[in-house]
Image (cartoon, rainbow, N blue to C red; front, side, top):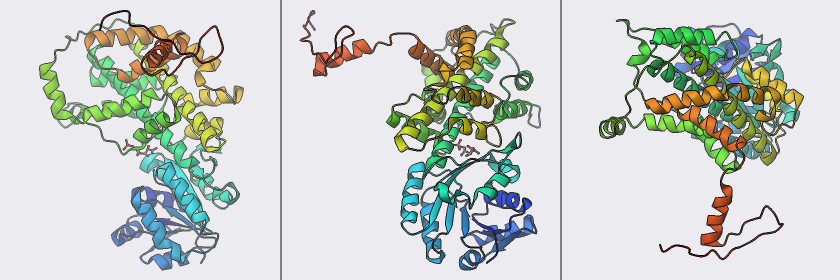
Length: 469
Ligand code: 6PG
């Protein structure tokens, strides 16, 4: 009964987190329902700070009280199953933590269920993939703040550090940590889609080779677009198959998704928040899956002939467009945080969320410093676009975004995420949006009433038929 923390689930994420904890001086017990994973864990990656167990009861028995049990297993049903399996062996005050990409409502449900049984539950967003888990992930813990002190030292020790500060901060109660991770993933989808569109523009309109584009991304990564995702894109495009063909050309044009992006989009619709760029990114993945239909459609429906029509300014215009669209994507994501914070009573600290995202996670980027500054300046900012830095950038770059979208449209290069960024800006900032006509239509066919610009109250009009239908 002396081990600091137990990890259930010893596949790559679980075992790397265990080693990371052990590196920081915590003793770790590891258990997996698949005994071969335990064997692999203790033989492939021996570490004096970790111990593998084949018996669940023995594993739980080895932990100091209150026990700290960290689940690194597949999200969904398996989490409920494992909770039920360990519950009989736990005591009052023990702590279960779930580090998977669990749906935040499941986390809320488990939080309530377990607190009724005297067990504390934390939903912890973990970002950074395998490498992050081993050497410093970003962590987003949500649960009971009074209990947080019991787990804080472990998580702060293993988290990535930026300017000496751990990329780990208590997010809020119940499902708040998993919610913040979910939207992180939605933003990740948006970032990836925007990068992919910039790549396609450079390739099909700019006429650059993959290797040339790799160098362009590498250069972009030195400036304001500096980020993990831009950096790995530069690497990816430099990678060739045995015969010298860029490897990316050999990869089937069909994207997977595990659901967190889609959840973000659905949640945003429920909250009444526009995260159109995230939704667009989900839709592109969905469309990409229709391989047979897409090739049939390509035969049936004509397409403009693409010309390489880039001028000297083109690459810079694409860069500016990418940066501008990225600003809009984050403005949308953070608007969702704001709405959810109020709706669920989480009191999210947007500045701290941006701070966590600066290191360890997939969307880590220099850009996050700008978001921190914006919320430091105005903690109550209703939309990031109202911050002087961000609206300044939109003003500076919107002409480039418009030019690039026009070129893409003329050449039939799909840029749905770039376009939805611009549509959001034009909808948000362009004065009227056409809702007056929508209200008139609603009132015409359903007497739903409307409000007037010149008088208080609700009005209904007896709309006349002016024309024969
Ligand atoms: C992270 C990633 C991680 C994972 C996603 C990928 O933050 O480390 O977001 O959670 O890579 O699950 O999601 P899709 O499979 O849906 O693209």
